[in-house]
Image 1 (spheres, chains in turn purple, green):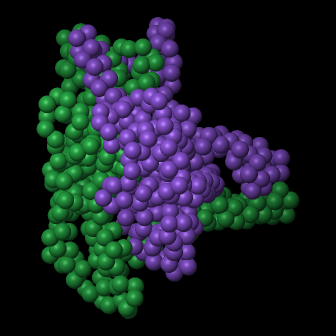
Image 2: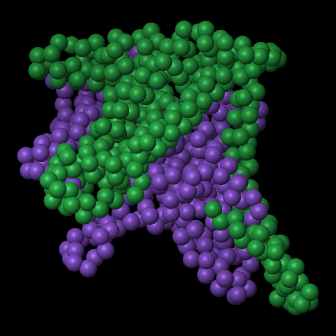
Image 3: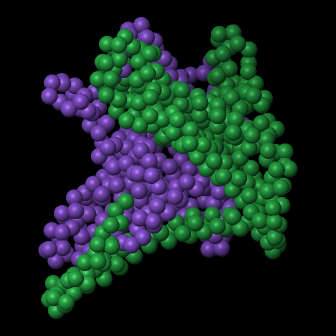
Length: 309
Length: 322
């Protein structure tokens, strides 16, 4: 494996963008906000281009929202609506009538929460050992754990499917949860996190008579909360939206997760009533939107954490 | 990587043994070392065992399975290289892998170009709220599910009642048969993929651009380089490490494309949007040809590794580390 980034390196650009550019005199150069200066006509063009890009991103989402708020009979009408004026909630009551939305949401929530929780705990445990309790061969073992990140899910899915069948877990929610708990990327993140905590705490605690268990559970684990939050949010974002594994590993409607349920509602020919399907899509976006609003920073940090690799 | 403590500890042990044999502090240290071993074992167990069972064992299983013919019902039969030969002989498989490569090239180039453009432009002078708005907006599609996005995009690109053709109609462009022609369907799959993923490359490049020292721009400006020239001669070489990371991650994601073509087109019309992962999925879970599916998966993995390796090789020539 190549050299790994330290979190302090990643924190640097963030610190730079948050600190004010006020007094550049004695500040070290890394602290200032850097900018490529564009001449003013191209600045206007840049703003226009970015505005257009933002419109391309938000337009489809706005269309989805406002179409979901039209009466199902009108949802094919053109011109389309982009603003949710005079909302009609029929599509939302319809989607509950047509598919077992509550079941889908419960399944998705259960799967996502257990995977996220499991990843947070197991990644913290393994990351702690790799950071603070080195043993002979631990470097090699860690490299092996990292190497598994290179193996795509699709390559292992056939044997995983057979393993799951062999364990008698075929077509259950556990089939989705158990294989997704061990996380190489989460372990990597938590190791980084523990490496950045001072080692003095362990010495101080062991002088006070604390054994290695107490040192982990009472001293370091509470300090790992921010790192665990990143792992949890990344897991949430990935598994709430996941489609491929649920498609393969579940087969009966009652074990479907939300994305799977929505795709089957739209149907093979895409003939499902637009506003009803879109009402389901909007419902499925709500938790993602909450994460986006409140956990965006953690998510950004987690997503770019591997970037220095 | 810090594996150094273990050897140090074992070399220091014999030296301290004779004098400290009976001292209580030493026995405590030894006991805690023994319990430390248990801590290590128990804390690592879930991750290491889990990966052993659900990643390493399957990869070995895949390697073995690729040389067998097995439908789960009858006994597996050794097939040698038959599965790989069958893959090469199958026109659908060939088309799917070729589609995937073309898709990766087009989608990644578009995604990176867009991301570099936007990451540079978002640095130009503007109110802070506006910059935050742009950054959040470009990031937003990353929190949505590819399946949901493909669901609403499929309606938007519908030939008769889709909003895209309606918009094109307002400027006098006749209805485009987006999802029912090969080129149209391929274009939509690429668009939907880039729509959802460019924000990730954007985020990585934003980090790279933030690390370019302002002094270099000032120096370049004195030398008469502004705008495009400054971008080409200062920004681009300095963000090349981020560009490499963005390109490697984008390619790996694109090579595994499945959700978008599955939901948008089911691989059609014909085989025109069938991807490599769709071949794995269909072989295994629709036709129960598990050996063939494993072989296809291994070919895909080899392709991913090859392309990643090529990028790192090429990067020696193009990437500039400070």
